[in-house]
Each structure stands twice: as structure tokens, then as C-alpha cells.
Amino acid sequence: MTAAGTIRSHREADVAGKRVLVRVDFNVPLDAGRIRDETRITSALPTLRSLLGRGASLVLVSHLGRPKGKPSKELRLAPVAARLGELLAVDVARSPEVVGLISTTMAEGLEPGGILMLENVRFEPGEEKNAPELARRLATLADLYVDDAFGAAHRAHASTVGIAEHLPAYAGDLLLAEIQALGRLVDDPASPFVAVVGGAKVSDKLAVLQRLVERVDALLIGGAMANTFLLADGKSVGESLVEPAAVDAANAIVDSARQRGVQLLIPTDVVVATSMDSPDGTVVAVDNITGDTAAYDIGPATAERYASVISTARTVFWNGPMGVFEKAPFATGTLAVARAVAAGDAFSVVGGGDSVAAVTEAGVADQISHISTGGGASLEFVEGRALPGVEALRRS
Ligand code: ADP
Ligand code: MG
Image (cartoon, protein in one colour):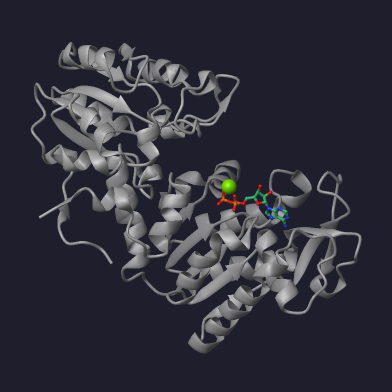
């Protein structure tokens, strides 16, 4: 259930001469201190530029990785602050702590247009516990609160929920764009609505499958997830990644689809190999997966069938690759689905870190209506669950 009250855009707030605490999701993938993908930084720039242009100074709060409530040298935000400074062409000051005397002094010294980045908020044990004291201390650093961290909105933490009790709270552009696009999938999606779900684990995505089957016209299953459905259908899956414990749940989804007249498709052919490091795979019908091989991709007949169903859609949601797309011999099915989603004129949403990478690799990212930056958060949203970080922004 969604609480009453409206979410205000930061663009409605008068921020001139004010200090604004912005919760961003700068949880970028790092490789020995180097940023491997800066999408999460660039996605926040519209909100940050707008606030700065309207005369605000900014106190930025983000988490990075999972430091579990204590400082960690590798998870400091220094490389992120440096890259943000380059992108905005301004100096980003950095506090060595989250809250405390240094952060307070630095925040109070900010001039309009100035930016201060606090240290990784998950260095504080109170963050993930949504400790009232941490929320209160964060709030003392600013006059207003703007949340643009959609990727963290499914977590009730001090910097995403607690703080909103203490300051006038607004949503950033990225967060608003996410809830608008994902909202179209939940509220009244144009039919036919086709969902494509794949990836590694069924158990991670059971809730979203159960929910989707209640609202889609077709549900196309791929990736390792498909192996569990194949097993449920009585096939042998050899050495394939599979979750026997989820067979009952898979059967329940198949039954639910049948009762509702939803077209639920699982692969009819797959690409198998003896190892995912094999230089190539063999296409076999799903009845012929031998004991020493594993399915690493959907086969060409399945890919064609899925593409043809996708081409009829007016709404598409895709989460989870169709195979081990990181390896060239097993990328074909995923790339075919990416191209099919891009080719149609349906309203299309792609979520999940690996699926988004696949769409980018296929070179079709600009033909997708909305690419979600929030993996877990977008799945929970599509499940129909209220996200604590979003609900905290509602005001009556
Ligand atoms: P997303 O990040 O888009 O939500 P997931 O993290 O659920 O997707 O799943 C992506 C992973 O699933 C990829 O690393 C991919 O290699 C793996 N995968 C997909 N199909 C298979 C398969 N048939 N066997 C083993 N792994 C698979
Ligand atoms: Mg993933």
C-alpha cells in the first residue's frame, strides 16, 4: 500500500542561499580505486547542477560498498569526489568523517555554489539501523533534504528515511524519473505487456515473477532461471545452474499463468557446453541436455520466438540476461532480446545491473524508454511494494 501525500520535486523549493543535503547513490563499481562505471555519478548531475544553478550549496551523502558500520580504507569516497569535481568543473571539498565537528565546520563554511562530500555514510553504525541520532546529526548540516538515491530507496536507513523527519524533504530528478517510469509498469500498463525475466537465481526473483504473472500478457523466462522451470517441467538439465528447492515455486507460477491465460514461455532449445569457458557451445533441444553439459544460453529458436512476442508488445519490462552473456559463445540470446526490446515501439524498461550492461553492450541503450539505475529497488517497486525511501518523501 502506498501512503497518501505527494512527493515534491526539489525544483519546487526555493534553495537560494540555502544548504541542501543531497542523498545520492554514488555506489560505483571500483577496481583498485578506479571507477569502472560512472553511470551513477552522471545520473545525479541534473539535480546537482540545477540546485547549484539556483544558488544552493550542497552537502552530499552517499554509501559505497558494504563497510558494515566501520571505516574502511578501500571504501572511502575520495575517488568519487574527485571524479564529481571533474564532471562539474568545481572543487568538491571532502570531510574525513560522516558527522562530527569537522563536517559541521566545513558545512557551515560553504558558500553558495560550494560542495562538501561527507565520508561514506555506511562507516557509521547508525546508518543501516536508521538510528534517530545519526539522522538528527545529519539533518543539522543542512536546511533542506533532497533524495536522488533511487538505488538505495528500498532501504530504511538514516540517510534515506530518518533524516526526512527533520528537514523539508524533496525528490531529485533521477528518483522522480525512476518512480514515474516504473510506475507506468505497475499502474495501468498498456497491453500487451510482455515481461522478460532471466539472470542467475530464481529465488531472488520469485516475488517479482509472482507479481508479474498477475499483470502481464506474456512472461518469457531465460537465463539460469529457465533451468529451474525446465526441471519443473520434467527435463534433465545436466550440470546446469539450477535450484531444485525452487521447483515448487516455479510450478506455482506456471499454474498461476495457466489460470490467468498468461502466455508463459520457457526455452525449447538451449546452448550447452561442458564449461562456460568453452570456446563454443552446441545448440540442443531441451529434451537432449546430456548429463555432462550445462545450458549457458537460450537457443536460436527460443530467441526468435521471444523476439517475435516482444515485437507485439506495447509495454516491456526486462530484468536478467538470457545466458552467460559475459562470454561471447553464450551472449547471442541476450543480445537478440536486447535488440528486440529496442526495435519495438513499446514503452520499455530495463532494470538490473547485468541486464543494463547487456543493453549497453548491444549498443541499443538509447532506444530503451527507461534504463533503471536501481537493481533491487526497481524489482521491489515492480513487485508493488512501497519503497521506504520514497514513502519518507511524501507530504500531505
Ligand atoms: P541482473 O543484474 O540484470 O538483475 P542477475 O544478476 O540476476 O541479472 O543475473 C546475471 C548473471 O546471470 C550473469 O552473470 C550471467 O552470467 C548469469 N547467467 C545467466 N544465465 C545463466 C546460465 N544459463 N547459467 C549460469 N549463469 C547464468
Ligand atoms: Mg546482477
